Image (tube, rainbow, N blue to C red; front, side):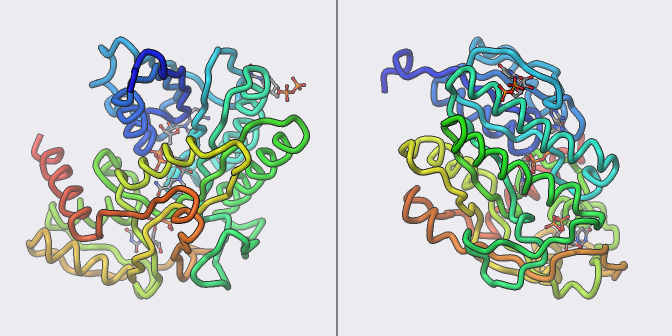
Length: 318
Ligand code: NAD
Ligand code: UDP
Ligand code: UDP
């Protein structure tokens, strides 16, 4: 491709987080100018330090709940803590980040006529009564529980995206992300994949919440980033929402056993109380992504876990 001719100015909010930093890598590799805006609430400068010397990368400390005036062609709105321990630490700020953040980024998109993609979540389905989850399912969400700041904040952000689209003609894309894992998850992030791998590598007990029979579907980060970029490139009439995830479904106990087998070592499985409102099952129907993005995940759980284990082994040895 003619890199200069196709170069876009792209804003990635939450760009110093787990997914955002991989997205910045990919967009720079594709020849774009990347502005990364992050308040480092759950992300870290370390995730993007390798990019600081790149001539087309710019890092900005900014909280999306405040207005932002920049000139861009595309916006990926990822700012929001994703792990329950982080988003529950300051739940009011979590809702503000999703809702005020969406308003500001949509206002920015409206003024600059930028295309804007929202990183929504499978959590909009809550504890689902439809399985696997299709985009047409409206969800089963507790509005007043400890997960609500995240779930309802993300649902309201979707509402804002669709209303800015209908009312102001903003060019939107909405993806609903299912559990994604890989290198650069924070070792203390609290999410299940990083917890289990770090526990196994340290020879500590592996903490299963509840009886471990709840299920999740785990997508490797590289697959997810490919889907983001494809979604952004779809024709203007196609807005989503589109499920992005790996339809392989595993119980949390199966995940623990797989991690233990791959890492080896003396760790034992121990059982802790199940947090309230923890969804019992989750698996994406990815028919829409297959049809409109020509996408499906390529990296199965074991090879993806192995790459993630290699990353954490190196990190913990430092
Ligand atoms: P993460 O916590 O690693 O990244 C989120 C980033 O947003 C962090 O760098 C954080 O500092 C930043 N941030 C938080 N509040 C902000 C604010 N007010 N202003 C500016 N920056 C702010 O999480 P992640 O896994 O990389 O998730 C990225 C996005 O994808 C989130 O919106 C999350 O809800 C969504 N998502 C992720 C998953 C997953 O499994 N990883 C699943 C569903 C949805
Ligand atoms: N906004 C922003 N950057 C811009 C344009 C708008 O951060 O380039 C913010 C602005 O602060 C406003 C929000 O986006 O609060 C919504 O913008 P919109 O134009 O929809 O609303 P209005 O300015 O009319 O309240
Ligand atoms: N979980 C667990 N042990 C842990 C961390 C999480 O058993 O150390 C469980 C958690 O209760 C949930 C699943 O793993 O059922 C996925 O949790 P995570 O926080 O990664 O994501 P989410 O619940 O948002 O899908």
